[in-house]
Image 1 (cartoon, rainbow, N blue to C red):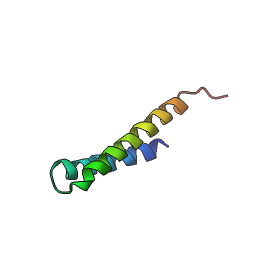
Image 2: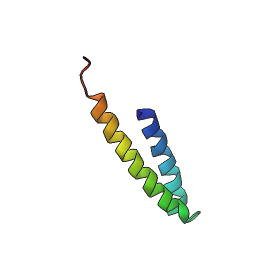
Image 3: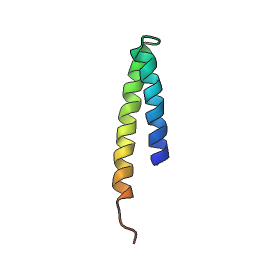
Length: 54
């Protein structure tokens, strides 16, 4: 799941660069959504990764 979070983070950064530089105005909204998805996946992966093995 961490690999998915990293993938979403990279996509969010690229979309953010396009949006914030004025290349595509719709990319800003996409970047915000992807960034939120990245944060949620990152927190979940941190919580699940910290569990001790049984």
